[in-house]
Image 1 (tube, rainbow, N blue to C red):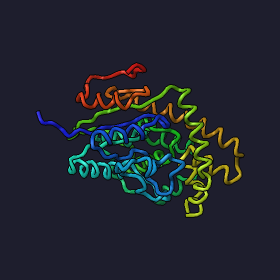
Image 2: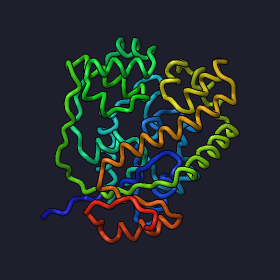
Image 3: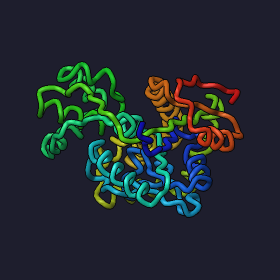
Image 4: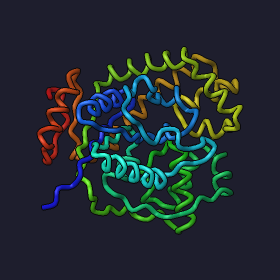
Length: 309
């Protein structure tokens, strides 16, 4: 039996502390980190996405941050290609790749080695679709490809536009095909109780606002990112953009972000809970426990989420 190179994946809902855990693990095992966040790939989108800072990286190399212009759509196909290239580069340095993020489809594209449809971007179609709401886009996708509409984030305009683009080009969105991988994945889920996450989301939002998140959104718009495009990113960017256009007041903006962030947490959990190979943990001493878990060469049997690990 051939030993496959091991890749660690740190995943979980927003505000759960994934980045800190990934850095701690990377320090212990000589690892380097590949981001799996569909908004952190964009340049200039730092505070609104909670992008890790240079200081927080603790000298650990991080990849697939700031690799795309927010005026353009960055597809999962592009992510998979770049991530696989970085995995090989890290392995060639005799280091351990650590994928860290909360975008389930990005993570699945690597872990499940999904064969993605090769459809070129249709700029004219994208421009038309960007003016539609997420609800309108989802209804369009339901008509074009009922099967794809059943397993897509109905609030994610970027993902919906890409799915419609593929469906129009191919007549339907093909069923997802998973291919054998040449890697072995250690899947680690980081989560926290609901009330803890809600409080962390609230505190995090206040910190981001004080640090200048509204200014960040304003600057993106000045640099040519349309309000419609900013709204399509959802959560912080959608509500900050609405506030800056005087469509909602500041109190409503804050309420929306807090509410929608926790709704996003629930969608992330729903996505990840389908994978029974994830080792879930939510204790304060999680880094030490995870390090022992990794050193024990990973138990391959399904592990249920537990608060007592």
